[in-house]
Length: 322
Image (cartoon, rainbow, N blue to C red; front, side, top):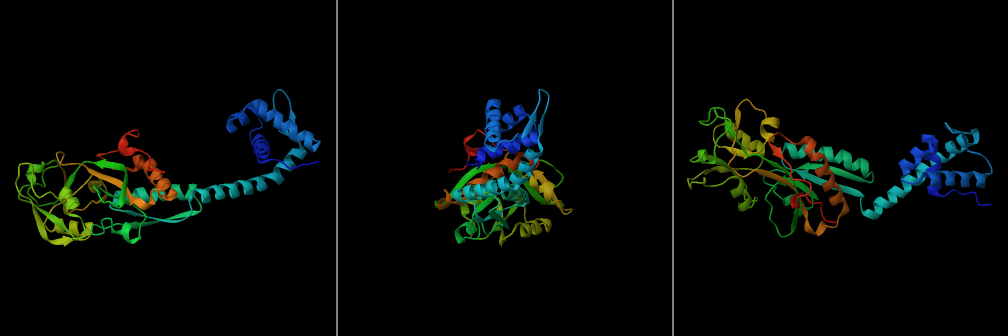
């Protein structure tokens, strides 16, 4: 007589061993109570021995049932682990994924997402690296990053921009002795005659002009500092020295507390959006899709004040492509 148990039979038996209740077992496994009862009776007939003692008020394991549970449990867990690993390998969730962040808030997101992603995908590790201002998207092209969480806009023919993860109010970093430092809210027009930091030539002009506009809405000029900055730390140093101003979002007053810098909100400037970007040729990489989904999942709990997230059903917050 064939006494081998099918995987589904093992799952029903072991779950009933935990629950000791036919109804709860059925609910947990999304099947009918009748199927649980029929399967247990089938196993008992096959083995020729009772595994459970049943009354109208309780279900208990027999001594044979306890022994079978103890023998089967490690075998079942091993089978489940092997099946899960095979499924992950088939989905391509293996190897190492390198993800880059621009800004402290984006870094918080990626490190938190890594914990969740690696727990769900134990055969795929995640390496988190920083993206500096002068990098822009270069790390995607040179292969030192597979996915970036960075400030938008990014409009490059070889890159895919996924969901907008956060949208934050625009802030301006000012020296504490700056003429506008006594105000918590300023206007775009107030920036006339000021000097923004400048960026390295590796940063596209369109990106720089969006974040560091050369004119106010009224057409009055805003200058650029003669020495390009390659990192945000360099930019803040220029601000503190009173040589320039630099924009950012709601993470600035939360994560960049400095006694020599004042943060003022500029509500009539375009908001700062951070989004996920990857190589278009990697659109089908399941690792990229899975990690991007985790970032969207954890973002709401970690977002800074004055930050909003696109509605889950909006096109800009749509799931990443398969």
